[in-house]
Amino acid sequence: MIEVNKDNFDKEVLQSDKRVLVDFNAEWCGPCKMMKPVLEEISTSNNEIKIVSINVDDEDELASKYNVSSIPCLVLIENGEETNRSIGLISRSDLDSFIGGK
Amino acid sequence: MYDIIIIGAGPAGLTAAIYGRRANKSVLVLEAKSYGGQIINTLDIENYPANNHISGFDFATNLYNQAKELGAEIVFDKVIEITNNKEVITANNKYNAKAIIIATGSDNRKLGLPNEDELIGKGVSYCATCDGAFFKGKDVAVVGGGNTALEDALYLSNLANKVYIIHRRDEFRGEEKSVNLLKEKDNVEFVFNSNVTKLISDDKLNGIEVTNKDGSSKTIDVNGLFIAIGRIPENQNFAKLINLNEAGYIIAGEDCTTNIPGIFVAGDNRTKEVRQLVTATSDGAIAATNAIKYIDNGE
Image (cartoon, rainbow over all chains, first blue to last red; front, side):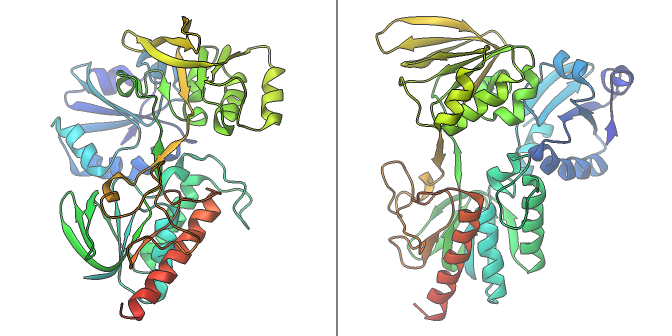
């Protein structure tokens, strides 16, 4: 799982060949910390998706560009376009179906 | 067959698991979402004895690891129903126990407006300390009249451009000290005797319609709406078997016993006066101790 900022966002997210799951989070956000290990695990086990992390405190431009007003906020991006979004702490099974697009 | 099945891996449920395991009972904890319960939203816990500062996340993670290390089995699955003969039916499975402890806690009470759910994270929030930072310099409203609403409004008044407090009565249930602090703020406006009746949005929240008791209504432009009108206990799936009060709490005294022998309740979803972290863990200890007694007496 890589850390993304406004300098590498275009390259890592918008121009990615794979689908990208963007995890908007912050150090102070408990539910974000709960999600982190699960996202890490998916990141290493699922080659079909790229998972990146954005710290909203450091990257407020990206957070406001994507209208993030509550975290954890997961945004799925395909060919540079947002295709789906999930807000708040979700269970592993809900996360799997969110990623799977079911 | 487990000795004890605990429903909910929050502070009450995990504490019950610790007590159950230390008495050498087999323990299964079933959790629908994620361990920790609502305490994980708390930035800094300052009122738990002997821990003057700990984050909710660290508290929950320590407790989770403690229960696991003692041998509690923790499965993430949602409980749909429990039966009189102590069968626990989940979304994916069925389990049997000698005793059950219901420690499901509570969830945010919603306004019940049609587009409320779809605006969560797009302006609608139930946690000012979680989401307030996204509304720096913007106009926001808080709905509610209790301590949470007042504390939310105070917190937001230091971030937002303007804070409206919408309350259905003309006086607050919450502490007078907070009310006085809010009155001193230039950017706080009280809207009394009013309910939020509409959420105005395109893709995100732009405003709210507020209707006064006298029937008149007006629109207030806000980017954020913080809903602090209390919580509802998550007991709906047990209502067929377990006696609840009008507000939906499982009726039980400090001994945590319900109307069904061998089924106990622990934490915020029980009828009680004080709902705090320390009373939740306390309930966990009591419910587990009584569950152990119940099993050992061979009832």
